[in-house]
Image (tube, rainbow, N blue to C red; front, side):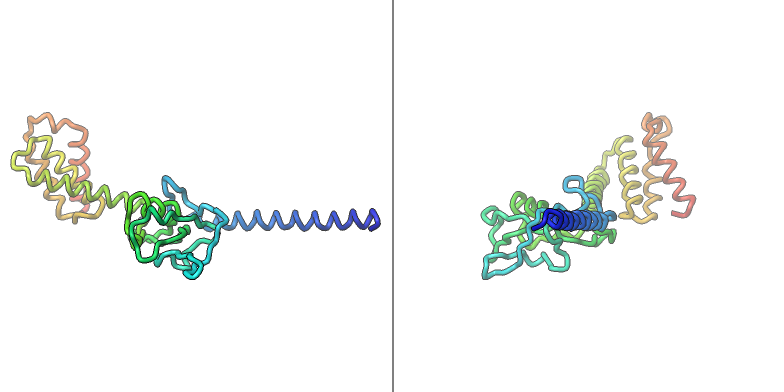
Length: 225
Ligand SMILES: [Zn+2]
């Protein structure tokens, strides 16, 4: 081939490659941008974790993706291989985990149930393979906090010999449960009662917590809940 046309061919192929690179970059930006409003997980992040692995579910080939790995929720190129020996006993072990797109049942925000998170659930925590993730990490943590608060509340309430500090604690916990919407605003009266049960001369009344719960509960009552 003539040197000039060789050079031309080289230029064209190089140009194609540049265009291909730009397209890939744009595509990647687009892919990342698509997850900008997803809930961020403290361990796994917000967007998909690309692995370039994209197996098709096919039992005859020994590939099973699990019943809650729906094709419209699976994010391509994010699969990781499972260690089926570590999974709890199941009729059909799951061979690969994909990052899965989800909408939180509580707050309605989008989030990813990460492939690595699934591996942790099924292989380390030994959750049964049908266990699905329907809430985002923020809502799951809030739920855990609420559960802890409720337990604390019930323990304090059951105690017949509460100290002044315990009564303040009870008022504070009840206020937190009202704030998070677990208790209705009728419980504000209960918070006021607990605070009022603390004698005027008690040192507990000088705590910052006392002032805080006192102010907030009075304000909420004043606003009509
Ligand atoms: Zn949520």
